[in-house]
Length: 110
Length: 122
Image 1: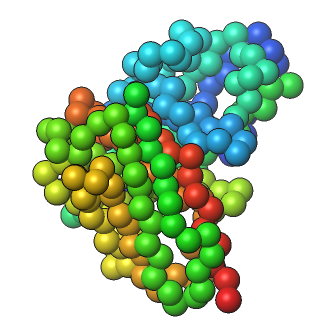
Image 2: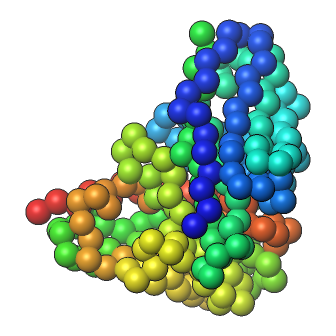
C-alpha cells in the first residue's frame, strides 16, 4: 500500500515561514490535500489539489508538489497556526484504491 | 450550509459490533460525484481512513480493515451508516464522518463532523 511520510514535528518563530513536507513514491503524480487539526477539533481542509485553497483559508497557506515530495508552506506564521497538519492522497495504484493519510506533523510556534 | 454529525455508542465491549450513523444536511448523496467517508483517530495518534461511499453506491474500504467494515447509505434519511465487527481495545478512537464534494476527483474531505469518541472496553 502507498505510504506518506511526514516529519513528526516542525518548529518556527512567529512571522517566519513553516514548511511541512509529505513524502511518497512519485507523489508528484497525485493530487495532495492538506488538513489542519487543532486540539479537540475536527480537521479542516487548508489546501487541496496540491496548491488550491478553500474559501476562507488565508493566502498565507500554500502548497506545492513535485517528484517524491509535497510541501505545505505557511508564510508569516501566527500563534493560531499551531496545530497538527496531515497530508492526504488517493492511492489508485493498488488493487484496492483508497484514501491515504500521512502520519501528521505537529507545528509548534515558538 | 453543509453539516454532518456522528452518532452511536460511546462504549462497546470487545468482540461486539459497532454501528455508527452519520446524519448530514446541506447536500444530497444522490448528487453525482458526492461521497461520504469515515475516518478515525485514536487518542494522540494520526488520522486513519476507514471507508467511503459515493452517490452511485460505489464503496471503498481501507485494505487493512476491509473484512470488518460495511458502509451503507440511506439517501431518503440523509444518513450513512458504518458497521465495524469484532471490536478490540485498539479500535478506541474518535470516529469522524466527512463530505467529499462532486468536484473532488480524487476525493478530499471539505466538511467534517465533530467526531464521536468510541471506547472499547469490557
